[in-house]
Image (spheres, rainbow over the protein chains, first blue to last red):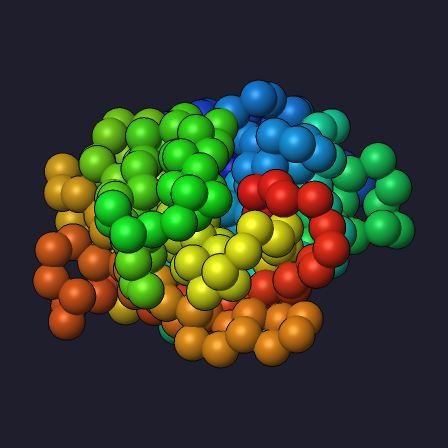
Length: 135
Length: 148
């Protein structure tokens, strides 16, 4: 994948991101991930609500995309650890996520990511994590 | 699992039919004190097309799902639960073309919160892909559902 540094193009080539329907959009000098609702993202059919694993996957992908975008690294950063806080139930609508690098070291970055749905001020979930930058 | 109560067997079957789990091709294999699930390798799980390694989110999803089931096992009666937080430590990349297993145990239940520890591995639990720590809210008096 070293031939492309465009995060949107790169994410489009990741099978699991395609499975979840995640796309990347550039907005206000940053990147935002968009994930439209699909039936196979459901964890609780009674509500219905998104699966916690889907929420975690979107947030982890947002963190990876932000690192690629800011560091202009051709290789995917590798997750070391992540913590996801689930703040409210993810509903059957389009989800959005974005991330920021809280601290960048030589080999490791600390990234914070947030996910929301219709109201950007009402977070559905948040992630903190460390990622290794491959050299 | 013949000694499992009816509601738990029902919960296992509902957890197996969860659209997300079915979509990634995973299945619950055991509902003993340690809840176990299995996820066969498939192309759609890939997170790094260069190496074929599955996306970290796949591991998170399997561990979250199996943790939820582990809480249900411990509760001894049907109650809805919700994930409060989940920490995943990625020990090593999952080897492509090999099944992934998740094993989770609810280590403590209080009136409102359940605490879970879990491991994801590829056949040898002593050589884990990832470890997880989770906290789940127990919604007592709520209508039985499946954790989100």
